[in-house]
Image (cartoon, rainbow, N blue to C red):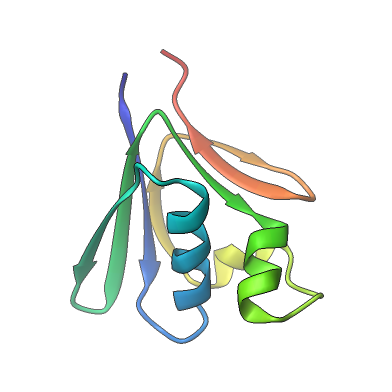
Length: 90
């Protein structure tokens, strides 16, 4: 299976998103780099709206808001009302 990745800015807006990714994707590997966080996983990474809302304590957060801190990603993108998913079809 191929690895997917997501690179986010390392700032206050992105930290709850990273925490949510780690919570919902226990096999994800987080690589802290200068000014960014790179997260990799086998096959798929999911950012769930409800998890981020809970961590941020923000009922208005939407998965599309990840684009405000997104640097890059590798894989196919599925962006819905309740999740932001990066995946590979193997």
